[in-house]
Image 1 (tube, rainbow, N blue to C red):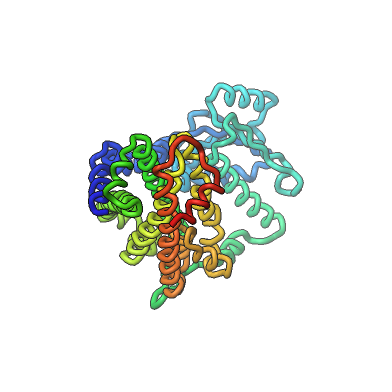
Image 2: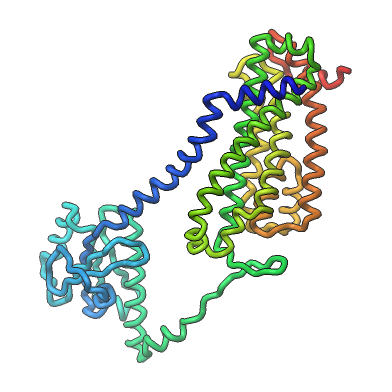
Length: 432
């Protein structure tokens, strides 16, 4: 068994795919996250021209509170407003009632089609007095939420204030009454209270997806290795000197150690980045962001990775022994893959309600535990006995899976020439 373990471990860590995946994949993933953010940031910095036709003559001032910049589009009453929430400068060209001519709409539509303005907003004269009247924003890009959000928020605030004035109510009094009405949410755990800010949800999903991808990846590698050795008849030489069950265990443990090495490298890279990025992360998400990289969370993550890998890799190895061609592997492995996908589909519900009976039961199902229990740990840490029970159940399941897969592997690796039905495979389990 040790010979097979060493062979599998060395073979995996020396392969180009392992090296690329270990050192380059994290950089690619970081780039996939950073590049869209960078592009979005650059686009957010673009200046946008918006024309507003205010037939009420009263709402325009709510869009032009910041007149630090003048718009490129010159017109009576023109001013600029910067939207601090989204980043880009929104330049407002205001058309007061006295500045509106019969050709104003046509001129603005022509400028819009020529891409000289990003859009124009028409506020009807009865917008303040008639709640059935709505303002209309015309744009060429209906997916630009920066413009829509900016104009919508200012329009609502202005309309609300003017309607209060119409009713004889001071808007400043209402604004004062609204202050301090927010609810701050704190996550209570043993001996401390922290602001979560969605960190638990993000952490649970990140770890869940990582476990899903890693179990799928390493399981597929095990199955592919079994199929290749079966086709090359190398397995016949091995089985003459090493027991099939020892070959199976050696394969699983060898690739597993390579996987742990890979995870350790990724963790080291993550820790190095976090050392420099953690202050900014804590500032953005709150002090609870530190829970993502807490030692306890990392230990649980490694343990669930190990147990999840052992169960699924053993299943994939047994499945690989039943086929001869890689093209047949997908069909055979589909039920196993389905077991990995199921907890991902349940992840949102479990993270949002981690203490319900259904969430507890689902997270204790051995094949679901690695993903769902990690989601519960980040959302609302379950009692330790539940975590311990999940490890006991996963350990028992692994030995049960090893017994079944060992029976299938022992017979399947030496069977050639045809595809085997489930009935025949079940017969292999009865062989002594």
